Image (tube, rainbow, N blue to C red; front, side, top):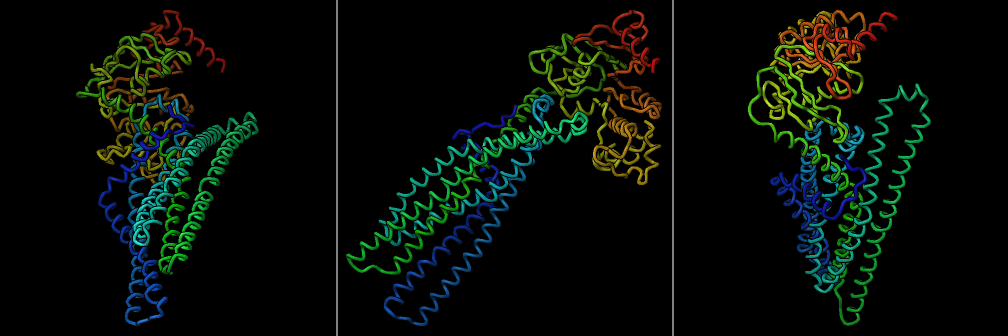
Length: 595
């Protein structure tokens, strides 16, 4: 389960930073280039005030201006300035490149981890929260790499360089500058302590905003039908106001502990430096160039501190976002690791299925399947029927290992289902859903599912086998016809025929039909029924059906009631028994006659 408003501890923040640096540390060669250019650039930039100090003390104060020496001094000054600018370009380029490579890998890792998550995880996690972490939070991490970490590294090196230069000029003042550092660190720690809480709240509220937006867009027809616009707007405004309040608190912290506090410290420190030189001037001569250089370095000392503090706000937001992304990766990764750990050995070629005393619950407390015993021979067709909530889809979810059962054993091809390699299981079992799903792309790509081992001829044969070739070849671009989002340009019957062709093309041993004809119009029904007859031929088939007239020819019918098998037998046997199936069939038949 994902935690939206979790406040990170110091240990957790340190662990997150280490993890982020680990991504960047992979690019050691690029880091070496960037750091080399950075050190050269800092050295060149810090040389300029020292050259001005030489010019003032050696030439301006004595009033001596030898042309040759001044020409060399000016040339060195110009070269240092140009070199500094060039090095800034190069080290910025290399740091930005490292940042882009790092965030690119993080995005791949988080997407891969989400793809491997179980259906239980998706049931418990709002899609808006996932979208927020994959988009908004990874964008924050990109800003962390691009802006924050590069700023910290560059200004950290610059700060060390300034301190070294100050020691060359005056050891006592340089030591005093070092004594200021604990005060600055205390301000940073104070800021981190309070801002982490508020930025955690902001990220959580933003995730809830995304969830509410996603829910509203998906259910807009229902919202408008039941005139719920005002209520949804009120709920959205409540979450939005909470996000605003959290943002306001963080802004107050930013306004107090960032630039104003550092500016106050820098002004007081500068007053101290000038007072120090004032006292020295009363005791004897003070070189003007030294004063200029030291004041210049002192101002430069606070420049990187200000830069770092200005980035602290973004740093704290990014650390919170990185924590949310890494938590998502860890949660989904642990689930995938548990499943992968059980997958050993080779897959079976048999289509035989057996449920041996299987019990299952979605929440771990309320079983939806109780002590299910079920055997399906290879090539046999069985149908599973029952009222809503009886557990029909749960059996399919367990067979496809979308969920892990709580007790008992499921065998596929004589082998424990939990031992099947996932890739082999997906090849072995084909699924056709009630609501066919098509991806953006061509008709050919939707049938082949980017399986490069399938030739164009095999794709055409699969379409012809289920009768989909007739409408596909009537399209302007035939198999190269573009499919819109979710196949919006096709009818339900056409979409279902494409999914049938997709299943045939991948030739599974076991076929699962989850109310595959429920949403088909009467004109398409005859074509779909013929396609189904071709589809189930020579395959072990499990059919979930609401319309009992479509399963009369099944080899075995399983009747579920409240998570248990209430009846089993053929269509004729169950009608003759006068039980639950007979009542369901009679009720449907009477309703059809009325219609």
